[in-house]
Every structure is written in C-alpha cells, then in structure tokens.
Image (cartoon, rainbow, N blue to C red; front, side, top):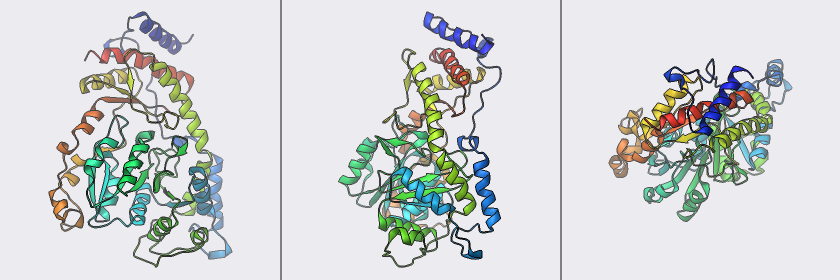
Length: 440
C-alpha cells in the first residue's frame, strides 16, 4: 500500500472508530504531498479533433459564418446550432460570441426595455444584471435558498405590475427548483429565461436545462462545461422569439440558415448589434458538444463517489439539490451552521493539500458598488429614472439571507479527469477536517 492509500485508509478507520487522525494544520501528515489541482473541464478534452476543425477553417480561408466568398459554404456554426438544439431538446439554437451576448439576445427577444422589471437572484454573475440594465429595464433581486439558486418563496413578493420576466439561473451546475418558478411565472403571465451558463448539459426531471423556460442561454467561456475560450448559445422553441434574437444578434438582419429554419419570417429589420460567432469557434464548439456527455458522465461518476462516501459522516449536510440526477455534481458543497466553522474547514483542507472554497463563480450583486449606487455609462440611464427605479434600494439590507447562506457553505471541486486516488484523497481530507471545523 502506498503512502496516500495508507493515509486514506487510516483516516477512514479513525473516523469509524470515533477518533480523529492528526490534522496537517497541527503537525500531522497531509493527505496529499502536493495540492490537488483543479482545471477547466473542456480544455482537458482538447485533441486532434478540435485542431482539425481549426485547420479546416484556415485552409478554407473563410472564417465568417455568413460568407459567400471563394465558393465556400461555411457550415461549422450552423451545424453546431442544429446539433446543440437537438441535444437540448428545442426547435432552435443560435450561436453567439459569449454567454453575455446570449443573455442580451434573450432580453431583446422578449422585448424587455425601459419601464420593465426583471426578477433575478441576488447571487449570480454580473451579466444577468447588466443585460437587464443595458436594455433600460430595472433589475429586482430576490433571495437565494440553499440550492444557491433563486428561492421560489421569495419571488411573488417582488412582482409588480411592471414585472415582465424572471431569470432562473442554474448556478455551479445545480438545477434551480423550476417547478414552482415556472408555476409562478404562468400564474402572473411572466416570461422565464433559464441562464444555464454554469450548467451546460445539466437537466431537471429528465429535460435538459434551457428547454423548460421561454428561452435558455449558455456560456462557453473557458471555465464552462464545454468551451472555445469564449462563446455562447441561445435556445428556444418559439419562432417569434427566435427570429427576434437572430435579428438582434446581426444588426437587425436574418439570413440562411436561420430564415430556412423558420420557413417564414414576420418581423421587419430593427436596431440590433453584432454578436455573431465565427467559424473557428463554431468548429471547436461542434467537437466539444459531441464530447459533452462523456465529460458529464466522468464528473458525475467522480462526484457521486464523493457524495456517497461523505454521506456516511454523521450530521454532515450538503447543498440543496432539486434533481440530483440532473446536477453536474461539482463542486460538492458542505453546509455549516456558522461562517467561523466554514472558514476553519477551508483552512484545514488547504493544509491537507485538497482545495476547498466558498461558493464562487458569481457575486452578490446588490452589494456591488456600481449596482448599489446605480452607476451606468450615463447619469440619465432609464433603468433608475422612473419613480420605482429611484425608490428601489440595493445593498446588503436587500439580500441578508443570500449573504448568510453563502457564508456557511464550503465546496470541494471535483473534476472529470480525477483519478480514483484523487477521489479517495478528497474523502480522506474531509473526514479529517470536517469534525475539527465544527469545534471552531
């Protein structure tokens, strides 16, 4: 038995026997000799297939997806869109330049603008808020629950006659509790955008995230499930919403293949912008999409081993999971009763050379100075010029439960390429650190 296997076995035996192995932070041997490395998933799967796609675009000399030059018909982005829609289970998919671009297309597709309000979670990435503000609409923040996602119980109190949509964000791979969110939306005749940027490929009760609301959006930035470095995708099964999104992303225009997919268009050109994806990104995303299920299967297998092993620790509680089978399962988050316990756990895990962190990849938006102080590129920006916009207050007082929840959870990253030994080390480190942290 090598040293790490011995330490893992010793930690498990000590825990079962009611005693605790010596903590590395107190002079004991760490579970690992060197820190366990975490890395973005998609690039771990790069190989000759992605390179071949890029080479083909270079050889063609036609990197623009709508180009008619040189008698070459660019097909990489359009093929990716068709396969992505089929994978998610929607009629249409639109490839764009980023996840932020996908959100802005979604806001435009729903005709959200000045005077409208959009409800979104207090903890998410900046883009969910900035897409609303850039449209001149007003962001209204609701609390999260212990799924780290929008708390359905806090939505209805935020609804006003001006509310037009809800953004349900599936954060850190975990599906939001969609049944009550969609029920509330139907009751109040509101649209639902699913932001799946951090949960590409995850599902809810057998359906891929992004296919349950009116529009789904995805990011393909380097840290996401599959990636071309940057990129994004929008999906919908509503032809009118899709046409409006397509036109917005291409300065009001619509060309084949999108016109062919719709069969008939109904909207006139309007002011839009340029958020198009190029053929280089399209080719890489096409290959990455075809590897998506392989990546998901690997990370879920590793994470479920962690969940099963840690579930045997008395009193240990996990993050809320509305659909464990649909969750991306990483990181594995552990709940503490107090921030001091969580912080002590993070210190102890670091000493064991197994990384652990608080919830990350997003920010508590209402406490960001530019939001709390309503700062945009112009002092007369319409979002905050209405009576309601002037009256609304952000800051810590607007989301105390969100702040509290996020302060009490610690996550252990799990990667799709982790070895069995890596998983054993994670479990051994938690078994050492968790009981000691509870005494903080």
